[in-house]
Amino acid sequence: MMQTLVGWHIELEFQEDGDRTKAVALVRLADGTEVKSHGFSTRHHDDPPQLRVGEEVAGARALNDLAMQLLSKAHSELRGVAPRPL
Image 1 (cartoon, rainbow, N blue to C red):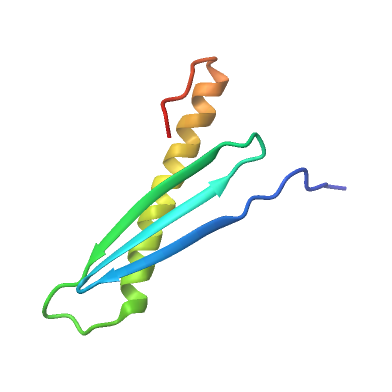
Image 2 (image 1 turned 60 degrees about the vertical axis):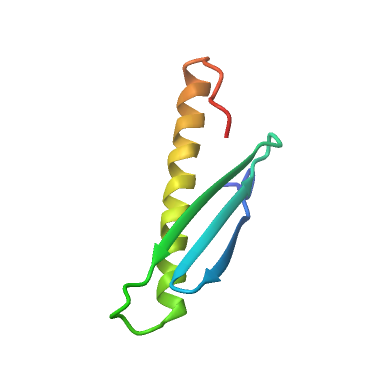
């Protein structure tokens, strides 16, 4: 039987500014570390305004960056090297 040892809650916030959407992702880890990332999207002037699409692109980019930071942190910890500042 599998047991859940820890759970993560990821916060994702969006900010719209004209044709530009910014996403900020934040996760708090069990060791107290907070990892924060950003993602952006820009709507082409010929595209119809659909905020949901901009949020999905910016959110995906922020989550991708978050994943890369977590992989880098884990790799550094396995190698006994101090991780670079997040």
